[in-house]
Image (cartoon, rainbow, N blue to C red; front, side, top):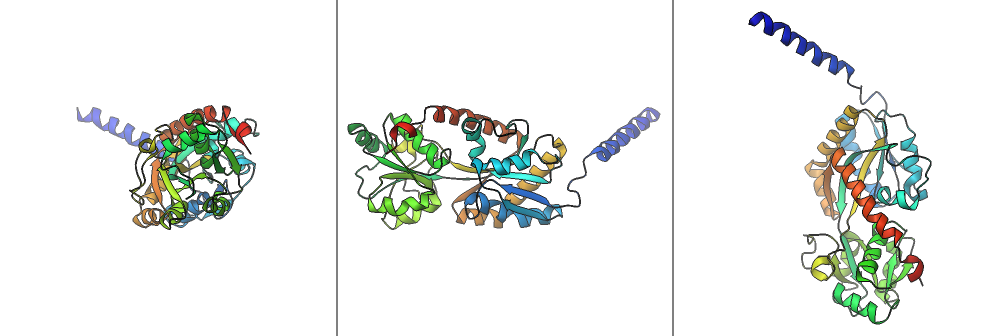
Length: 325
């Protein structure tokens, strides 16, 4: 019996050694570059910068973060899509990865095959706020006011396809109301007009709007997530405020070049998950109102496909064109 077992164990050992020798050498002796799909200063830029030092310490090579805004995030995405598939160039992006297949269907690369999911990083709750002079106390009131006088209720939006714009579309479509969409370069630019009552509503990151709610300058109507936020437990969810269909978070994820060997993608995901689990990382994000929200490559891929389908329906029925000022 023993003389049969020994060759079998030897074969298993040699097989494992061969598999190890076949495993891709990652990281190689060169930096890992993170291409960010947005400009400096925003959350999509700040998150990878917060993670880069810990990730570099873990994998033993420099991690360089570069901002590549433009073309709805497709400048950065295109660089990563056309890179060497060796796990040394990563894309950090947000909802544009789910909306661009509808908004920008011919980017010069294939969204499905030229980019592969690696990890979900973080999610941030969004808050629907109103000007203090706007009479609505909740979403039910908002819809009733908008139906009484179509286009009389205005909502500030930023770029088409951002979570802010998508949330506005949800309110208009699920509430079956004509809102006046007022475009701004960023939600931050809309805050003075909201406080002054020149525009009625907006949706943006909880962390950016909550100080204005706390000061009484704005009214918090609803959190657009299934659960209330521990940062503002007194503000109801959208479902509690009258519109259960209004469900959207901001989120940030990592992708890499299509064709990257699966062992490299899996190693990348493990290293990122390890950094996200560090207490100092979790606490730093929590202080900004951001939650670590890890998904592995398979989970992230399923999530992106579901969000792309959901947002495609919204965008194909967009009310921006017929409800703009």
